[in-house]
Image 1 (tube, rainbow, N blue to C red):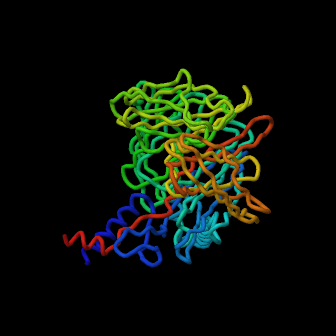
Image 2 (cartoon, rainbow, N blue to C red):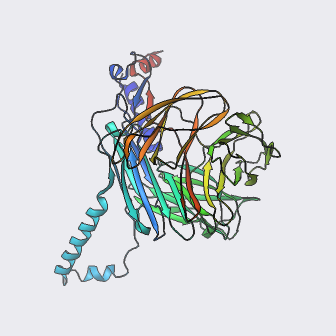
Image 3 (cartoon, rainbow, N blue to C red):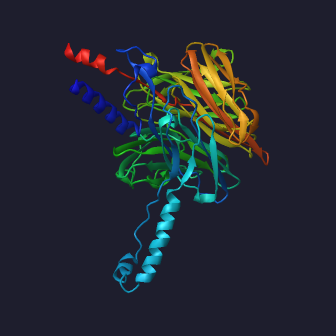
Length: 520
């Protein structure tokens, strides 16, 4: 019995160490509604999220939002807190002199210590803290001082906890609307669609949530293979800190389309690419889904003026990708782009033009027999020449059970859902608003092979922003994205976030079942 219990605990501990904070308690058959001896599906009881530093622009206005959906069976207590990542600074050059003069300046040292203590106390205060499941909270920050955030949630707030940051930059490089969902720490990330070109300013943001340093390698792949990098290996990210790395400083090669591969040697980090353009604004490029022989990029805006696909296959094998668009009427093959050829280890880009032509659409890529893994993302432009804005949609993971998009508004929010393989039924819940409102729920049927821009519910009496939670009821797999849009000075500001599964539930084997296997 002891051996079985210890084995189960060791496995859960290892999982938590890799995925970053995920944890559950021992299953309770009655609470989980499962019979003894069967795997129990339980709410996650501890999880963590990381949000990158929003902007370096003094004109930036950022909204942070945090939310946990109501989850049956969740613990009755708990917290969900996002705090500023403590920035590590270089030692002051006068530090030794100050130390030598401590005895002589005891009064000044005490005063300095009090100020430092007050500063530390302020840094440790929550930026956002949830008060109850089902109701989002938000906070605002202006300028370049808006911090990267590190957060944890436990108890009733852990299952499905989601956070988002949305930033509007009024002018300059990267002007427009930039949004990114905060993500869990991990040890490997792929970012097809980055750039080291002179017209782009792309940063890879690395956030370390732990009390020990993380060591990271950054690999860059261009049209002819891996780029020679000067300082891309062994980058140290200090404990509980955020490190933005300008990609163009890692290599002398200027290339329009680059795939970034982040590999963590020790520790774990959160990672996201901020892609800023001199002419077409900018947005966040989240990590692509893991390399796969089948990829889906959901929710390309129906009024997209240009769609550029960037794809990469690790290893030496070439592949011919089959390209289809999941439209409202079903899967279609874009004329002139029936198949795309990728060379192993080389980044390839393809201009697909006005792919959606006024209808909702999702791009579906398939390798023959799924034998060659690929990562991919699309860059989308909206607006007329001279007044265009850009956003990115990476290959997404399916919504296995539930996913949430935050910071929605009554106008300017589009929820796009696709079921490329089989039909599906989904339930969409609009939460209460950050400042008031009554939740609303609707159910939708998604036909096989189609994408639908659905008319999502809006809370009655809405005040503030709200959350949209998508749950898969049957069928699938289902992929979804959310677009936020507004118009400023004739420029169509927008940002698109794919909705990954919130990983709020986990199947835990019953200990008695494990014991019977052990005895055999």
